Amino acid sequence: MTLYFNGVILSMDATNSTPEAVLTQGEHILAIGSEAELRQKMDQDTREHDLQGKTMLPAFIDPHGHFPDPGFIKLFRVDLSSAPRGDCADIPQAIERLKARAARTPVGEWVMGVSFDNTAIAEGRMPTRAELDQVSNDHPVWVIHASGHNGTANSMALKLQGITDDTPDPLGGRYGRDPETGVLSGLIEGIAAMGPMGDTDFLIDRKKFWQGFDATRDEYLDHGVTYAQNAWATREMLEHFASLPADQDPGIDLMLLPIGEMEPDLTQGDNPLKWPGNPHFTLGPRKLFTDGAFQLQTAFLSKDYYQPIDENAPRGMPYTDIGEHHKQVKKLHDMGFQIHCHCNGDAGAEIFIDAVEAALQDTPRQDHRHTLIHGQVLRDDQLKRMARLGMTVSFFSAHIHFWGDRHYENFLGPERAENISPAASAERFGVRYTLHNDAAVTPTRPIHLAHCAVNRVTASGRTLGENQKISVLSALRAQTIEAAWQVFQEDTRGSIEIGKVADFAILSRDPRDDVASLKEISVVTTIRKGRCVGPNQG
Image (cartoon, helix red, strand yellow):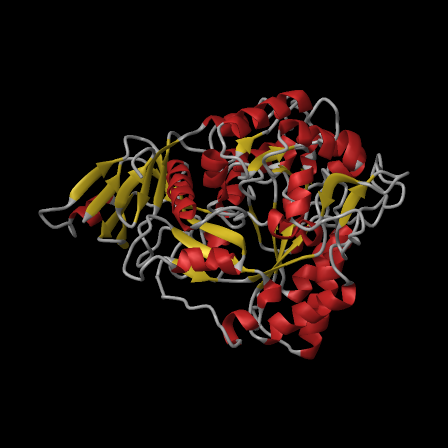
């Protein structure tokens, strides 16, 4: 047994109770109450964990991310991120970093740069094919955007992928070309056009997968996260996860979201996925897309971008045919799956909401919890519909810090930017929501993410949307019990209640105090299944 006492305990239960002490036995919570009551239940071998005035809450849950992609970046790729996340200032600096990697990479092997942000770099654009050819003609070179929704390839990479000047643009994607000659510029936009180069497991074999897994697990545990998510699991990625024997504990628990288009073949076809049943990996919702990213102006809007960069697509672009999307949603809905769908723009959201409504009319289902992912510019009328349809949403509130100024000045303009990630509106209309970092787009940092949703301060210090601020408790619940509920895990985790798993995060102070400096709080201890695993002890 272990007794936790002498601190602030935020249970995140239905009443947000703050018990005096918690008693655990093995991997689960045994009792909750006053310290005196629980001491009566202790056995002689009980370990005492004096919180020393610190704050304990349920361990954080990542409701949308791409585990273990952060580890792949750290170990195998060239980080080209710009401020406020990194320090890559311009394309020449990026080229030099890629050249340095190429110099120590065997001829013929890929060189991959990641987290490049055209909106933060001095030139305000992606690198060109010709610039990447300067890196190497002996290596395929691929630079993918921070959003994961486009990239630039050098000539060798284009050749290896079979992309030529005559290759037609696929639905929901396009190949950049010289407007006069039609020659490929190297730019590839959209999931459909990038193909395997857009998958987070691109160039990752089994050995690299588990190396990346361990690095990502340790990072997450250091920040109090014990339940993570892979929200775009290819068959190859699922087979990597499935290679772990059923009786081994990987040190973190995960929800895996297979690509929706793989069904029914993934589970019911002639060659279904062989799943060993490891209890730490759960196959969850199926994942779909409707649109792209704001940084590339491929998020699909109902009104023009504030400063459009493409006069032929001033409102962005859908990534799917509407009829085909309705077909996919109905298929997955009728098969009994929960659906998570990437929808950044409000027009992209409308496609998914319409499809869910049509599926429910044909096949009514109670408590389906179909989830709209990102929902950056959801309108009030859409939130009202979502409440009526029983839908839920996960907001990418980290955008407020990382790209909020550019939303205000370039992407959306002042009025729409004030309402990005409208969590307060979701509360008003009764739509349950979570908050996410979409790692590795932004790093998984639950406290900073809560700060973004509570204080809504951009990197330059601008307050973006006073009326969309939420309380600290709401922000923490969105990453604990609401995140558990959103994927049907609320009976086992997400709050400090009897019988639930003993997963806790212990914070340096009470987050309800001095809200303006919320981001300065640190996770001092992470407890997983009753054992201390972080920080730096994973």
